Image (cartoon, rainbow, N blue to C red; front, side):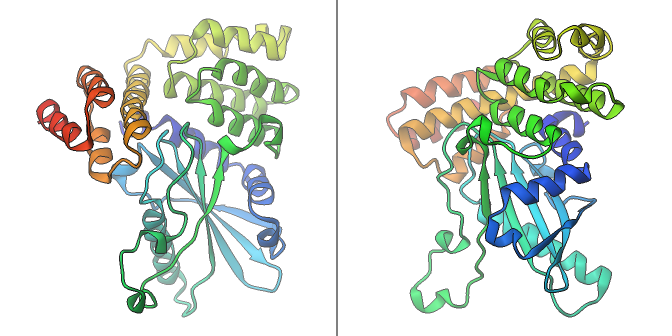
Length: 332
């Protein structure tokens, strides 16, 4: 059942299970001085996840191995924040997952040296990313003790900072990142048409049809910003007559499956997530930054009626302490 509650997770994993997408992501979205040290022809996806089970509705990850031009091997660790609200403790979470990757590598190989890890955070939320990208920025320690604290910096890939035409890679990678960029926005229908257009030439193959179906499933379960009619229009606009031909096997199949209990639960979870993020965005607009204790409590709310009350409170309260009291009353 947890899988049904993570449409972003499923879409992300399907994308980076494709070797060409993983390779092209490393090629185009890591800094050139980093890729210059890598043998990009050797990028390989590693199965598994390091994200805590209770965070998988908000995060997903992918791990790639890549050869170093000077010999040896490195890991590229990609953590996607698929909530629409940046988490101030992201650097700490990345450190936790990197350490787990090192521990797993040591257990499996027994090699004394630890391989380099290149951590990347992929973000596609609406608010600008304003949280620390270095672990040291989270530390509250006197200067004399800072030398004894761990340090980590992750690379940020914020899709919101890319114009649509700047998104690069294979057709499937471009189309997927384009939809992810717009998934929380009201112009998703237009972006979906453009994304499907990128896949038009692939629709003669089974791989292309599967990519279209995965994309439609993602849009159907991750948001309520587009409905069946908009999906039909997007298919027709992007693929022309071919869109009409494949609609019964893709769009109509999605519509039919939408009547099943499992997919309905996925859609409901997507709406709950959107409601939670609306509350947090309202608070950020008024009281930036929003403390972690409030963020955590809002993310645990699973009643649409209570989230509606909290949204009203978020735009009315005079300060964060007043909102904490509202949380206590509404959520218990």
